[in-house]
Image (cartoon, rainbow, N blue to C red; front, side):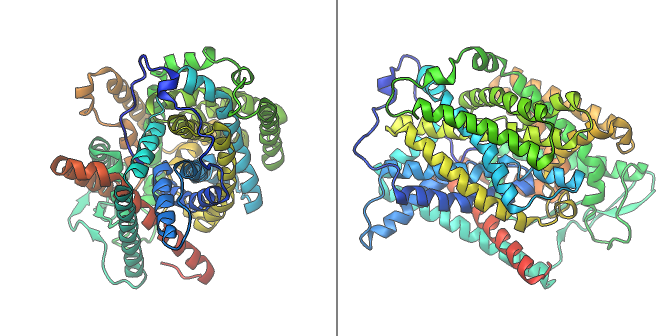
Length: 615
């Protein structure tokens, strides 16, 4: 999900020289301060994506956030004699920072904790660092090989890269406007941080009761009684959820509210009444029963998300064909341009990435060598497909790519949980990093940056993200099996990966009562809504509920969906009433709210780990 939207430049008839200025050989680019700033900012922002990923399953593109922060830091440093932070230096900063921030998609918020829950295998920090770096390196190498074809020859839009290019141009054309947005970002971060800290202290000292609805809900058959608080129908003062809602927009926000109403006001009571789901034993009267109900609810929720994602991806079949047949080999693409990664370096990187991704699968997870090699080779193909789709739509299908690999290896090696999860981990993580670098390289092509230096910056960023992000993951969830899939950490992406792996390991017979029927209905609805999204006229498509959002509402507490709806509603109202202000500041403010709450959440987790204090 990108930080900001922008209108793509015309591409019909524009020559390469008109679209892409020549590489600026005079301005500094890969300087020590640029790469250090990108690594430090990216390391911090990686914690935000891991935090939000374990909360709602989504991460955010941090390119524009890193640009604004880098610009603001060095503007203030100029007051004490620092040299101005150049546009191309800032581009290296955002390249490194965005790749570091996206380390969460290398497995930290989905297959890695799913593996721990299913098998009990816990990975140490060093192993996590090597693994996430290896996964991400595959994506970087594939992106280097695709850059010329997809950006210069095919001229794919890569809307996130265009948005970053337009933003950085505006920042350096109008510095005062950039600083205004920096202060808005910091103000949002302060608000998010203060709210999170206040809520934590209130819960720790029992200063205030939860803001739940007072009315009671009861089973139609009178089998059990439960409050709206038990079902999660309450208000949650989370600035992160408000910020996410403002970013995703009103359609997704309304779909989340609809999904929460259908699942937690109708489906959950039905499951409790029929005995398909059960309340926790000896729970307080006002407790949230999310964990026990979610053991049943996640099956239809995951089914809807997976079928909707794969159906939407299937509509990109032209992009898939073009990706598979339209590109020359990577080695042929790297010819004659002094600013590209040298062919020898690229081929060496390709061999290293293949070897490292294979060896780590075998060494860390005891995956048979043939599965490991096949998984990496399949990853190269699927990363190309994902990059093409991302270039045309701005959406990187990380989840669908991982699910494709899970399904393939579920058939080839049924019952092999580690092979199913970790071979797919390579695919999803590589697809994310590949698309991330290509969006950054689109930015660079539009502002005259060196693609070779950007590629090197990406590698440094991946290194920083692996070092800091893996440490953050271990601090946030030291016990994934006990902490995840709970009210505090719903981890919907973990639930989805875990469910697919379980399905191939245990079969349909091991599922809860009526879960198969619920999956069939929800999966069919996901396909239907995804088809409607693509087939109805664009003006009518906004009235089609988002199946991904409805599915997400089934696997996170209802209070999260309610907060995201309120954020989406607030953003919609502000955009209608103050469109110019909204265009300048809404996404920046939302990004600040997310970052502020995430960083304080990480800080609280560190404090609780060091002191053993709960709350």
